Length: 113
Length: 113
Image (cartoon, rainbow over the protein chains, first blue to last red):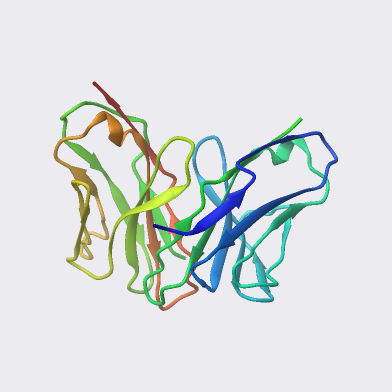
């Protein structure tokens, strides 16, 4: 059973609001990832981290930012939400060297009006 | 760079039918290969994996064999159930590389009673 948690599961907010999507894992994994999933199901990597104080941008350009101050915590922040940010956001972690297996949270579905 | 190509969906089957979802990959190293499943409203979870050529991964009646000669990792199940309706993602991870997994676009499976 994977121990990775995302909150909130669902969020509806107005344009211009600041939001933070939380992601926590209790497995002690070094590597963590944020994916944006479009309605066609495809996953787009937007941020990743190799460990504390390490953050990198992914393949898909995103106006969001992330931080990694603690191993277990990898929050994603949007300073000013827009309708184009409406999407499903999935957090994942990986720790076992040499396997590349990911553990995913249940996702945060964001709707910006 | 690395890439994963899987068949487009949706794949629509009747209960107890045989399932094949094709997946081929391109990688410079010797990747590990994965199938993930995403049930409605949830995050992805690992279905099965194979870490070297000719390995067969299996779980819940699903199987896939790592074929290096054809660079393929096709997912099969002999008799699908309605509860197998989900989106299936093929993925690879190069243990000698960046540890950033590469995902296919996902294939939706719909099983009718």
